[in-house]
Amino acid sequence: MKRVPIPILIRKLNSVLDSCVNDVNTVFSELNDEQLNWQPNEKSWSIAQCLAHLNAYYRYYIPVFRGKISNTRFKEPTEFFNSSPLGIAVYRSVKLGKVKNIKRKLKSTKDYNPLVNKSLSLENVIEEYKEHVKEFGLVLSEGATINLRKTKCPLSLRPVVKLNLGDAFIFTAFHNERHVEQMKRVMRCPGFPR
Image 1 (cartoon, rainbow, N blue to C red):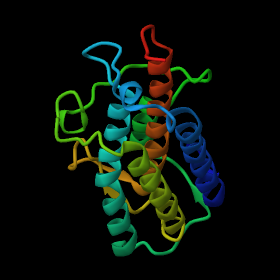
Image 2 (cartoon, one colour; image 1 turned 30 degrees about the horizontal axis):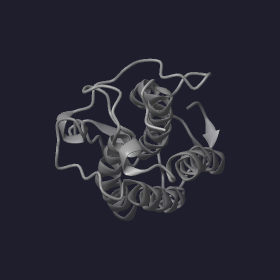
Image 3 (cartoon, helix red, strand yellow; image 1 turned 180 degrees about the vertical axis):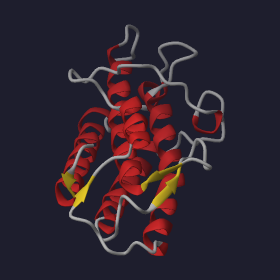
Image 4 (spheres, helix red, strand yellow; image 1 turned 90 degrees about the vertical axis):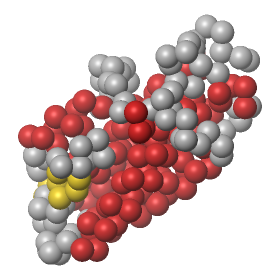
């Protein structure tokens, strides 16, 4: 993101997350197990698998974010946040288009791919997801008290690559939005159990 005041950035990210949780509450919470676990084909994810994928990311990022916030030496927050070129590339890769379309397909790494990693739990995915989003909202508030540009965070996909914390926050929020839209598409597929 181009130069944006920190409070506005945090509000915008919370708004994205609120929209995701609202969709989970209104669209997906009433689905039965058959509907949650239905896949359009063997290579496509079910709604439960999308949530398991997001939950796996949260299980990685929330402790990392909290550790970086509490251990940073850059305790002085700035008034504005500017994304780095790497950050822009990373969050644009998951950001939806203007009409909520997924602009490009991405391949998930095996650790976060529920078709490959069978250890990703499909039990209670909705409740776990809502808890993670709530916790991430608290992390966003905590992050506003430090320098989001200078504090770095390892990427889950390649820990040797570091994003500044603000860009990691943006990626996480837009990554949620992307998969909530994917879950809505699953429900629109022919053959989805009614």
